[in-house]
Length: 304
Image (cartoon, rainbow, N blue to C red; front, side):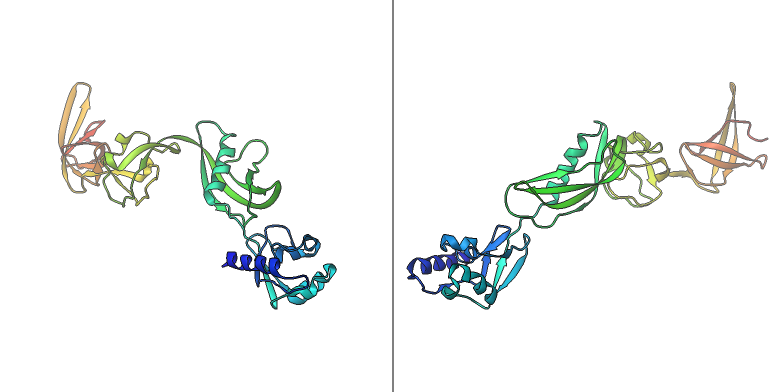
């Protein structure tokens, strides 16, 4: 439709004799900072470009010009009586948007140039700039001076044709990555994890984060966790093989002597965990480590 309107306007200008009416469309596009009379009529006489009608709208916006204002300004070149004007002319300035990926990649590249090879950059949130004028553009992140904090916001200026046109921002976190056992799927509380449920990745980790998948396999979750979570010791518990009230065999090894007796578990525990056991022979309570097969090993005498 716009191409048809433009073609008709050019045809009218070419065919119209001097002084004939020139029809102005009700909607026009501009791609400059100032609207001129020539912008309303493509192919207009050269002198019409000197007649300014005011600033152009910001990219992606519109501005409405009243017919009386246009006609008043057109008198400077003797064109006021030649214009066939609608009541209003909507001036539109098309804009181009900066995508999230472009903004994030510019910031990642800038931050990576300032951090070590074993440090990771995580994007927390993004604020996109508004529309900018069409044309060659450049994204210029502004990093803090000196050492980078662990969490900070990076303003990103958008330059178009050598002028700063808009500013967006990206909030990032920088941390030292370490090998960590990470869930590859969402998992619910009480699920027993297998080798296929986890993998080792470089991730943010602390002293309690697990790094060996064998520390996880066969353990069950104490709480529901999302995929991508680095597992910690406190997130897991052994699957109980001894339950409260079970009769177990207590074994104590002192030097080269092994003694055993029956006991009653006073709690639940998995293999390798400590459980309190009542010695059925003496009635005393001892702590032992669950070894499997109903066996609980104690490090001292059996409390006889």
